[in-house]
Structures are given as structure tokens and as C-alpha cells.
Image 1 (cartoon, chains in turn brown, purple, orange):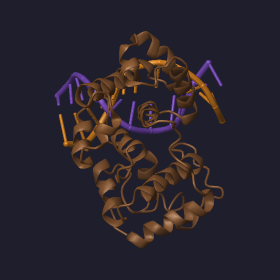
Image 2 (cartoon, helix red, strand yellow):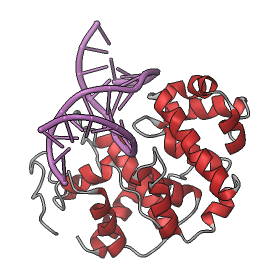
Image 3 (spheres, rainbow, N blue to C red):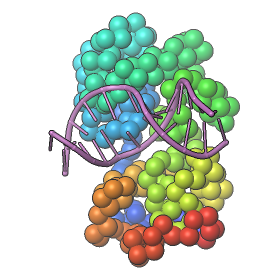
Image 4 (tube, rainbow, N blue to C red):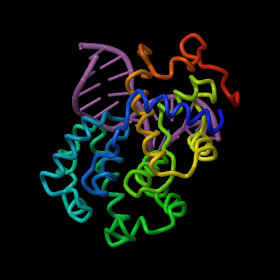
Length: 228
DNA sequence: GCCCAGGGGGCTC
DNA sequence: GAGCCCCATGGG
């Protein structure tokens, strides 16, 4: 799939869903917190957790660091893995406070490819979370890949589903213009189609906007590894 | 009441 | 370095 093919998919999704207006968040710190909490969990539950944190004045790096683990755990309980996520939130806040005086603007002032490597070194932050933070909180032109991206492009016959994260990210970034708004909307649209039509165990193809170009289910998983 | 969602860490060999 | 288990809630 070349640049035009990718943009065609983008247009098909956009026509179906319209603008998705990501990322909901009053502050960039709230967006970061959401990026960590949304790991493996529906956004609905993240909203509850963020409301809990906000209600207790914990949507602030210093306040969050100072609060006892038990309080954070209770607040983020709806997002599953709440003990792990409490550790992850604190690990990020610790890094932010120690390296940037708790100031996200200062952090994002750093050249983003360098910052990306740095954040990947923070405990609890993997590539998807780091790219989400950079794109949606920092407005940096890095493409976010998730399980839906892998699954959908596998079903389009472009790659095997177990493709490496960095490889698929590079696939998009090598072909698409370096455009924050495009990356923002594209990932949000992929999440939309994935959520509605592309669940792993019970896909509901129905009126999926990509049905015309999809290899699933008739074509199985497509032709893994074949470059289209 | 069971099964599934699905990112990241950590362990194994 | 690939494979596997752990985390542990809530919706269908």
C-alpha cells in the first residue's frame, strides 16, 4: 500500500465516522494520565478514573506524587490493573518532576525524537503509550500504532498481524506527510473502526467502511508479509 | 457466571 | 529473543 492507498483508507474512515475530536482532556497532563490509564481498557472507564482524580485534586504531578498509593489505587480502580497503573503514573510523575520541574511544556520543548527515546526508558511506558503522549499531549508528529492498527492492516493483506510495533509505525511514517492533525485523526479513526467492527474474537463486519478492501473473513488473514 | 478486552513488565530457557 | 504468564475490572 502506497501513500495514496493509505490516504484512501483515511478518507473512507473519515467519511464514515467524521472527525473524532481526540484527545478529550482539559490539560496536557490530563491527556498524559489518560494515555497511561487507557492501556488495555475501554475509555469509558478511564473517564471515571480521571473524574475521581480530578475530584481529589490529583490531576497534578506534584499532588499525584505526594498522595499515598492507596488513594491513587482507589481512584483508578475502574481502569483495571490499578496497582500497576498507580506505579506507572508515579513513575512518569517522578521523571517529570526530577527532569523538568514537573513542567510538561518544558519536557515537550525537547526535540521529540530524543524525548521519545527518553520516555521509552521510563518504567511503565511502552511505545504505544509514549507515542500517544507525544502526539496527543505534545502535538508531535509521531504515529501511534495499536492492536487495531496491526489487526486491520493484517486483514487488508499488508502485513502479518504480529508485525513489530516500530516496523508498522515506520510503515505509516515513511508514507504519510509529517502532519500532527493527520496522525491524530488517523489513529482515532482506526480506533473507531477497530472498536466497532474489528474485535478479535467477535468481529462484526456489518457496514464496516473497509469491507470493500478487506480480506477478512473470506480472505482469512490476507497474505502475511506481502507488501501491497 | 464466564469470557473477553489488550499494553507493558518480567521471567524463562 | 521469542514465548508465556501476570496484572485484575467491567461489559456482553
